[in-house]
Length: 153
Image 1 (cartoon, helix red, strand yellow):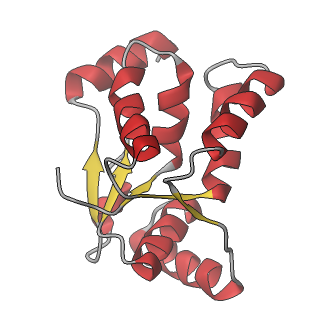
Image 2 (cartoon, rainbow, N blue to C red):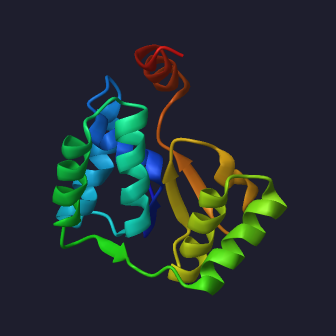
């Protein structure tokens, strides 16, 4: 593990709060961010996405997901990325189109570039398409299998 900083992808934040058999892997990174052990950049927009994932994929009630994200927002040692300028969004879409990945992944890669983040903590490999960031896929193949079985995939 490098010294960071690390950008948290939405999937890591959602998984950390989901209570699955493999959530501890993601939760360990969240804990390190909260205590300041790692330098973490978390876009506020990703919390909205994590809320959506918690309710639509993991079956949480809206009030439960809201409370979890609200408590995470209280972490004072996390660098909360609170901007969403037009230029960043446009550049993110350009990245997404060129790499043939989701718009969110292009946006997160652009935020990482603008914030000087070299490593994105993620649960997917779409960030491998971007030369200027490193994707650290936090789950092993066996852990992915466990998560997929838990979710009924």
